[in-house]
Length: 368
Image (cartoon, rainbow, N blue to C red; front, top):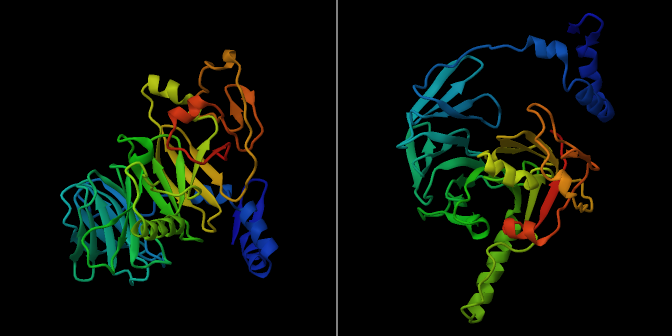
């Protein structure tokens, strides 16, 4: 197979063979063909899958990649064979409002499907018999995202606009879920959880996006161990009224943010411009976190590169410079001042007062 341009011929077959022989050739293949113009120019619409009667809000592949699930405003979920352009199963989910998230439960043989919707409900379905087998009503606002983890095939998580991340265990007889993270404890009652994702390499790490510029990364195992030890200690001793315990232990959460965003928030608010992390996902090896910052740009954070933060005090004359034109990046540049492309920390009590929810922050100039 050859892809040709005016000046270049690429022998893809030979490159693929070499990729299988050597790890070094494999990484080189990935870098060289990451963006290949001949391939991009061949991209086009193959087919439109017809079946829903409302807006399609969510899509999800199964583990093998041969089935596609979709959820819609019509409150139906559909399982497709996308390669044959064929609708396999259609079922009403029992939701009373728009479906925002749909997920296959890992290791269920593609039989169990989870949906979250604007009616604040989370439903679990057996698609082979088209029945809803579990219904959870713990959230008090719209459910925006469901996340699963291969390491825990009976467990999944939900993020909702009530600011709460809930954990579900289908082995339990209870019809209620556990509050894993309550963002309102740190950020006030107006915070809304918009998205979440589990690290595919280490399922103990959960990324959460909400309104505001920060993306949170939590250690689930650390939270559970802390609460277990807390329950044991409280059963052995009596605490005073003022002895209120922290809901999440120190070190269990990290915050990532593009370095130029926090100091621009006041200006954004004055212009009624809203920053919301609408989507988060990890790279396949779990070392990078991709974030879509609604109303701004898309950011890629390196989770493994640790560096001491820098602190900068900006002269007042640079505080009110105009924003960069649309379509241009602010990566590595803040208000016209060039900084090293590294982690940056803004010190001072004003930042701490404005963002009381931050207990470990990585201000990062990242890839845009």
